[in-house]
Image (cartoon, rainbow, N blue to C red; front, side):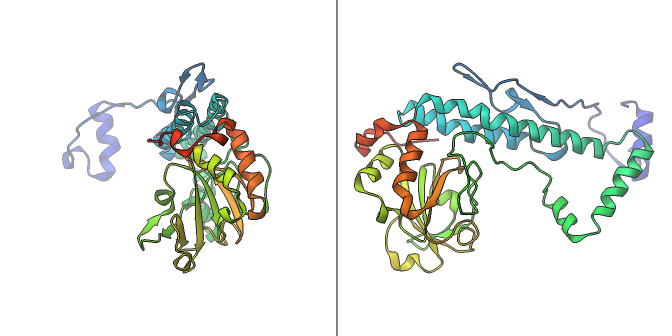
Amino acid sequence: MESDARVSKLLAPWGGPSAMTIERKAVYRFHARTADVFRKGRVFLAGDAAHITPPFVGQGLVAGLRDAANLSWKLAWVLQGRASPEILESYDEERRPHAKAMIDLAKFMGRLIMPQSAVMALITHGTLRLMRLTAAMRRYFDDLGIKPKNVFPRGLFVSGRSGSKLTRGGPLPQGWVRGPDGVVRLSDEALGPSLTLIGFGRDPREALDAAKTRAFSACGGKVVLIAHRGQARHLRREESWEDLDGTFMPAAAAFGWVAVVRPDRTVLHDGPVAEVERIVSESLALLGTPACAEAPVSAVPALAL
């Protein structure tokens, strides 16, 4: 494959070597591997140390970034006394199945891209071309609908489904929001690296007693209001954001809904604002942070990731 004759033959349809400068020739061997576990004792594997992804869907770096986002805040919360060390068990439980699913997708795409015979090429590529004749299937492929969703079947979240479109164990959508200062930001930037109690259209503090509010804040949490466009201007409070493009209401949650969102933007718990005290209590219990309930806010250092 690396001989000059073979390279010339492969490049001939595009002008041949005489029209090009060949800087390097190599046979690339890709690997598809996943470690049996991502954690053993005090050792955690992330990125290429935990999984090797073939290049066909370009998700190797993304998988490593997801590992870091999932693990870093859990380590920080445990080291700062905000959560029980038991939450670290959820890293392997959440990340390994998704990393393996992405590797399986890359292997599948590799078989489509590199058929081993002309017959298989005709069947696979012909089928894909026929499927793309419909607008729905064309959007499905173009938007990578085939890609496994970053939603955990098990992990560090309250199990079950609520009456909203949010998925516990799934990501909070990202949209454009405007703050009290008039500055427009992406919601991930606006929320910051905190454990966040979000009220959709209603301020959760209206139904949350002072003790629960202090406990949530002491455990690294903050309370945020996401309002309909134009509503936040009349509320005049910090940590209130206008939903400029409808990403959150009604697309994700109805007016009067609340959600506890992890620092990695995974929905931990949600429900109606009338049940916010139960939702906060169950969220803190899941994190294993009962000691935070009586701690002053200043006793817990700020998180820096």
